[in-house]
Length: 159
Image 1 (tube, rainbow, N blue to C red):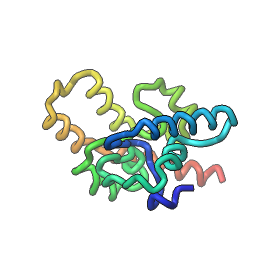
Image 2 (image 1 turned 180 degrees about the vertical axis):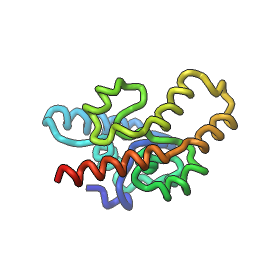
Image 3 (image 1 turned 90 degrees about the vertical axis):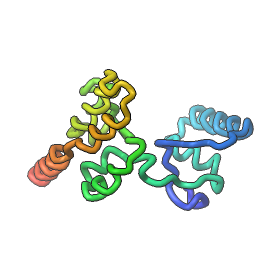
Image 4 (image 1 turned 120 degrees about the horizontal axis):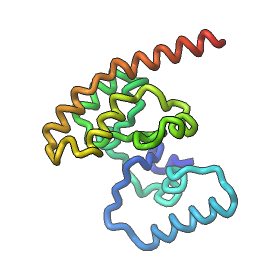
């Protein structure tokens, strides 16, 4: 749906330089139309249509998706050292576990990353960016990757 922009439009982090009122109106109209027609769509699809050829991708370090730790640990090793934002795609750390499992096919196994979010939210780092960076860099993803492996074994067993 979005070949004009050079690929997939990810709305995990959007930076709008000099936003225009016409863009706001176009976004509002697209959302209204989707609601009125019960369209199955996402924010990425709506924004991708509004901005078509007027967007540029950011470097992946600006939107490192939590699932990279589980499904592409080598890439995680490369990106985590320069990550600026961690995108808690799907289930959010602040939601109850029951809600996370109900809304996300891959809700389990992210405890080390979710624990980091809770530490930040609880003020553990007190605006100490170096301490936060060291903490992020030391997140042990072994459990996340192991959880994926155990799930894969379980799926194979059920087949």
